[in-house]
Structure formats: C-alpha cells, structure tokens
Length: 347
View 1 (spheres, one colour):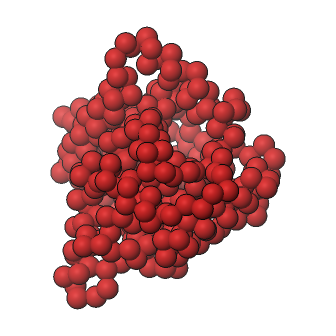
View 2 (cartoon, one colour; view 1 turned 30 degrees about the vertical axis):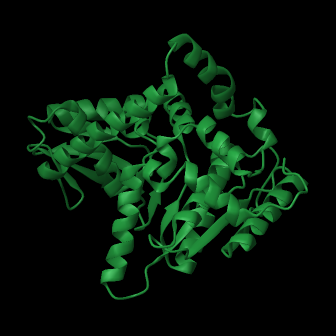
View 3 (spheres, helix red, strand yellow; view 1 turned 180 degrees about the vertical axis):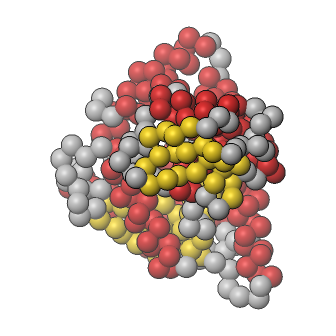
C-alpha cells in the first residue's frame, strides 16, 4: 500500500520510461496506435484522444507512466484516464480512486472516475468486468476516444489460457488477450504490455521510485482466476522447469496467427448472404471453417436460444452433411437446411 511520502510522478515516469521504453512494448499495438495517430493528423484535424484504463495497480500505473513519458514528440499527452470504482472493498476502493486522481493531477491529465451503483455482495468477476467495460465505452464516446489502452501482461496471458483450456475454448478464445482487439462499435483495445512479465513491471516500478495500490481480493480464493494465479501457475511453472509464462505468450501469438488465417479463409468464401448460410461453398472447407461459418450465422440471425454445446455440434454435423434438416433452437424457432441453405424460421 502507498506510504504518505510525496512522490514526484513526472520524475518517476521519466525514470520508468528509461527502463521500459516504447521499443519494449508490443510492436503490433504500438504500430497500430501510431498509424491511428498519423491518420488523424493527415486528415488535418486534431488527433483523437486516447483513453487509458487505470486501476491504480502496478500494471496500469506502469502503462500510464510510460505513455505519458513517451508522449512528447510521439503521440502527445491528450489522454483521458478512466478509473472505475467497483465499490466491492469499501473504503479501500474509495482510496484507490483518490490515489488515481492524485497521480493524474500530478501529470496534468484528465481523470474520469466511474462508480458501480449496482454493486452487490458476492458479485462475480464477470459482472464487475461487464459494468467496467460499459463505463469505458460510455466515457470514450463522451470524450471522442477511439483507442483504449489496457494493461494486460504476460502473466495474464498464462492465466487466461489455463482458464479457457478448462472450458474447452478454441483458437479464438486461446488467442486472448490480443495486442489489438477491435470492438463491435468501432473502438480499439490496445495491450502493449503483453511483451512483459509482471515481475519485470514491478521491478522497474520499484527502481523508478513508484508506489501502487494492491487489491487485497487478488490473494483470496473466491475467483477462478485467483486460484489459477496463486495455485496453478506457480506449480505449472515449476513443473515445466522453463519459462512457462513466456511459452504461453508465444503460444498465444501463434494461435492468433492461426485464428486470423481461418477467419480470412472464411471471408474469402463469404457463405453468409441475407441471413442464410450457403452450404455449397463450404462443401470442401475444413471443419474448423464450417464451425466459424455457423458461429457467424448465429451472430447474424441472433435467435433467442439456449442451445447447448452438444446441440451446436449436432447442428454443425448437419451443416457439414448439407442434408435437409429442421433443427429446434427452442421457443424462438428452427434452423432449417433446405436446398443447400441454412436459414432461421420462427415458430
């Protein structure tokens, strides 16, 4: 927890950037950010603001300080810093917000504080994340931000991969968190710290003279991620007798390459037209491509259904065979295959 000593945050930012400059951040994220910045400049208008998610923890603090220190001559300092108070830790949560606001004032940055009014005891990690990202989206729109910087690092990759393996995710899920992620509403999430481990970030912050907030709930056993972080990852790393976290980061990057290739293959086939899936163009495609096509079809027609994973696999088999089928999707209607086309029919 932070002490009461006064910290010269601009000096700390400069010292940190001397250890972790922009050249050590993920190149894909940084190149995309610079491309967006230059595109705005070429249009002759003011470059769009950048939004930075800031919890007050070590990772998000390091990201904010590096972006601020490297800003002059590169991308400026027109940041909107977003802090969300989940109100799940009482006074400690409020202290986190004050800490973040104080740093932003020292750096001359606008800090927007959000509060989860619907917070409740026993709230899940997923609920908190949904509320937080709704706040991010709302404030980004308000301040005209297209890019949101997030502070995920390599330890987060390992944790996410192990969690998603447990539920049987494919390449799309295992390739998260990605350095560049497009949202459905035209925003971009950038994660430049994916080249760094948590230990590297904490060490550099300490040498720079920084202090940060520690979330006591991170050492509890209530959440799946915490159990993976505290129990599984250390045992996995020890059993591997090598850099397992770095290996997970490399695997994530390779999985993203495969996922991107499969998506491009499906784009070229273009089987989805006017809400119907043309099964003829999928006839010689691998099962992985057909699976993605079916997922896209569901996203396009959006039937209200509680179709199970087993049910999805059964429908996928019908799609691959291409035989006439009337498959129940629950009360909303049916998936109907006729004349080599998959369509949705309401009840």
